[in-house]
Length: 172
Image (cartoon, rainbow, N blue to C red; front, side, top):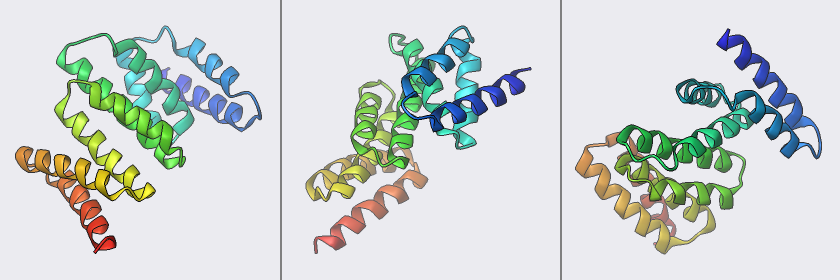
């Protein structure tokens, strides 16, 4: 049943996203259909949309997840909230909306979740590299790099290293 609902909602979001001038109306429509969904199912639905690259649907779901969790303070809620903000920011980056991406990553930094905050630092350093702000790339990159070393997060360490090295060579 959940798969049918998800497929139907994805189709509706896609159709409505293609309609001109109806973005807020489409959001409200989807929101009304998802607002009573239990948080675990909503989170699962958001992840499914994200991995299927159905980004408009993902934005609606993760925004709702963030609204549910923003006042909770348990560890799992903070982890999920940071992931929601980071994925919202990532989607905005894919859409080349760097200002909105930056705002989402700043929200992730405010969440007391070290790994989620570090991922936000990595994304923020990438945004600064798009704008050519070498000082900020290095600042966020160094902090992310240190965290990755300490936590032995080698995958993200390579991302930070690549971004910082690229910037260093561009300014050499």
